[in-house]
Image (cartoon, rainbow, N blue to C red; front, top):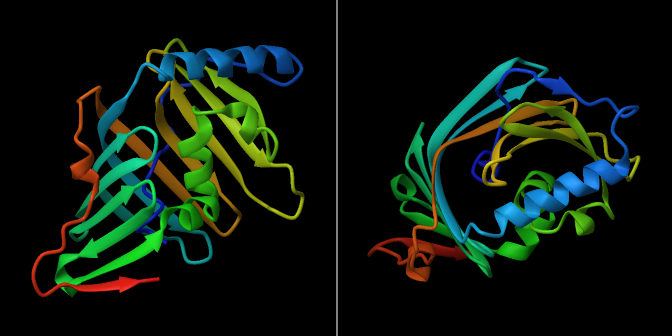
Length: 218
């Protein structure tokens, strides 16, 4: 699970709290539309990520960190530095996970991964088209500070028992953190040191297999 859930968390002090009774849906839609507009100016980005997965039954915590690069629409390069080296390449069609210590690379279809993973779906598509997200998820404005919005996302399907807070910067419309909680475990992710519009080449997001590396296609 840890190899794919590497994308975003919650920090910052609480400023203005917007309860449902004070914030109507029209206000939230306006905020989300403005966020999309600002975010549309960002063509690519790089950030450092820090992730903690906590299992409630054992209180076990798994920490990881690394460097995240993304070029719109679906190009991703993820380098996990700790606790061990691991590289993930996404070119919009496939996702390749390479673990040097195992001399092995696993190739999967990107659509199958992102569509089947609520954390990736919510965070990656959150600022792309919130109207599409609203077909499946209930989105509410939870908190607002001078610099950020925090949105609460829950599934409309009552059989799905989870919730997620997503913090978005007012300055650039980028997700800076998230917290996912399904009652069994919690995933916290924080992104820092953003660099945007770096003019990344598409080749950066394609895996070139070193010699003596086994390629496994799923």
